[in-house]
Image 1 (cartoon, helix red, strand yellow):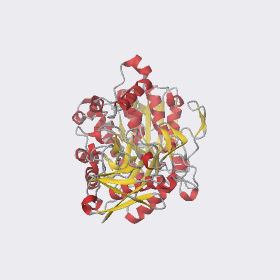
Image 2 (cartoon, one colour):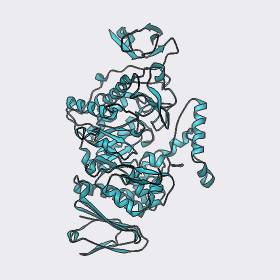
Image 3 (tube, one colour):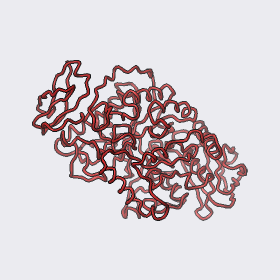
Length: 575
């Protein structure tokens, strides 16, 4: 006999619907309903009817082969044959992370098709593949941040078996896997959780509406829902780590914060599995408590995305000053971003109109993941332009050099390493016409100023928007794409050879705002950048004299005993 269970604390009746049958379920004292079923029914697709309403998927559905509105399909995790016995992921301190979107990484847009690119990534020098969210969302195409069935790998990508094959193949290639998960909201289509229980609450508001109920009445089972989800990906899908989306939109005033509970449970699972697991948070709060140890009053997460590094470099190189870029735009900002994970660490922010952040100088640099491009910073632009679409190649090479020689953990976004011609645009596939139109109009309103200046905003519902965002792998061996790829390969090789974990006080930066040069010493590496349209000489410190030129973006860059002779818009790396 098998058992189906579901939590629905306020329901009067719950029925299991499967194979044309409706079976009444019994409730226990904790609000869980259950029913025992025969083996043949246990293999059938199923749904639940709450208070005799139309049947809807299991909140913990393991598979949704017909999408968010279809029945749930049971799976048996033990049936998959793994080949990764003895696998151990590389430590985060030596990581080079490659963020990718399954639907646009290849022309097929599936887990299995992604496997064919793993050899390339390993040869490039990547240590970890970070997958944008793969949990079931509305339609066949989307970014994944509007997931609703958090336990079910997306059907259009290849479902549970496809994801397992991809993770297993990553491990065979020596690549760790980090999975992006969304625990701060649910998508607008197919979210039936409120029919079952108080998963959401209106005590707090998020950009997506009501907040997830993590500290209100009946929140214990909601917390359990998310913690169990995290443990499932790590245990049953052999994922090596999780990236938690926008934890600043997770509200919890409990004595033990949800993030601390999650980190604690991951540590317990880690000891049971005998392999290292990592949890990395995205947050715009500039709050080091996220990655501070439990015994020092922190939440104990392993890493955190640091947007300030991106913003400082992007604003200076592009000259953009709108929105949050208003807080950046100087070489001084870049200098601070290279010596601190937060530029705004307790200082006044013009954009926020208040003091923002707090210092994190006591923490190891490699706890912070930095980037010059990622899915948000590209895709949230009106037309999804990459950084290389906005600045010249010589300038892009400087940005890449600062990224790959920084003391932090670097992340690159798919195709960045060859300056891919394809944008990464915002795309959806909502089947509800009213919702589809609302998303379309919302995107138009957001960029109304852009439409008048530079043509139409791409329609997120159009299939062409997805197709336009797919990588063209053939171009990477041609022209400036090949030149960019060679540069990234050299930078990655250099980092692999020379990088050592550093304290932030081991990085020193000199710069001249008016002459537009930057001089960075990070461990055994010296990086000298000239952003100006004219040549400059940058003096070397005594301890740098005799260092050899390891890499330069232009042949005309020269190193003498006393200085680096810099060509216009160039970078030199010494070791």
